[in-house]
Image (cartoon, rainbow, N blue to C red; front, side):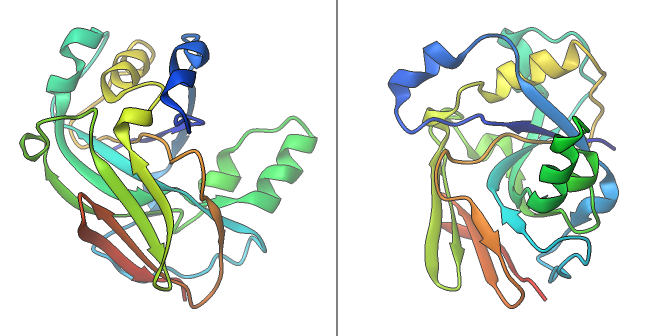
Length: 204
């Protein structure tokens, strides 16, 4: 099972979208050991002093996809959920200074809390899904898929041209352009899709 993420995939103003599409999507992978499911609490990782949260919609692949066209790509989605893509920012900064990869900064245990998968049929408009993140009772991020640069179909088509996507593979599809920030021990995080809270955990 693969976990795939896409970076820098949302805009503040929809008028920016066309100018930012250049067919070069910023794709990274995360090991399955990053997953924390069923709203279990997440242990603050000892490897970082600067843990950054990003709330994201997560699409789950329902059938084998290889060299899928954009036109057909959404038919390969079985479910949509919500998760947090955590980044150890200090680890990432140190790696970048040596022109190193993102792997350790994105791939530590607990870096991908997810929950709330619902059938894709529950979402009649994939380009108009609302989602948000509340931390300690304060809304921190608000997103809508109308502000996405590369939509679900474009991501699936692009990734499947490089690697086969298998049933159960998950894609973190990007975080809203504003609102990402630092997580601390004791924080209570709650993420919702269309007003329904689906992810609810504490950083311990």
